[in-house]
Length: 193
Image (cartoon, rainbow, N blue to C red; front, top):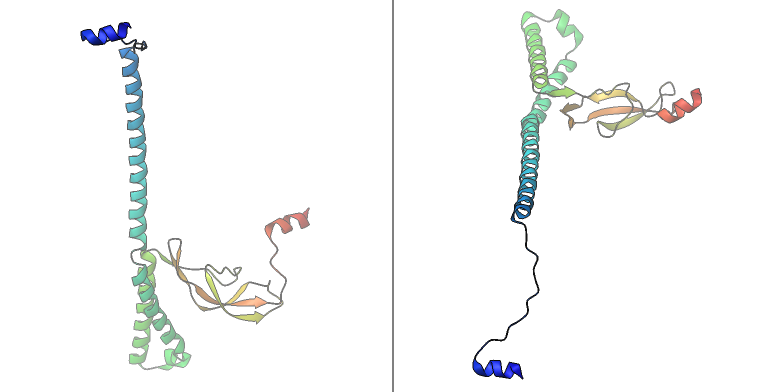
């Protein structure tokens, strides 16, 4: 009944509290220091990754920004090439001075457009004699040719172009049909052994 007496006299009963181990202030500071150091290192790594990603995005933007313009220029270059192909050979040789000057002007304009495209990273896609690649080539027709391995590009109808590692326009090609198949590299090695 002591508790009733303590309560009646206005005294608060003594409550036993479990002893908490004392935390060494130096250890607490070391732990806090380690946590802050970890945060700084993580923040630094995140900033470095952000810098690299931003740099890559800027380079991609710089490289591929002219893609639409380059596609349009390819159409104009194609028109000049078609104009030159359509000229009969005798017009080049026996034409009057005005005709020859016109032909030379068209040839000069086409070469200059090709040079400027190359200067800005637009390069032709190699097609003829290559194995057909649907990422770079667009098959327009098949050519029965037993002398060529099946799936080999034997004719280029329209040149393809790429900028960097992106295809601006696939090469329109004719593909060999009926010849021996291309042997995968693994089979070629096995046959030679």
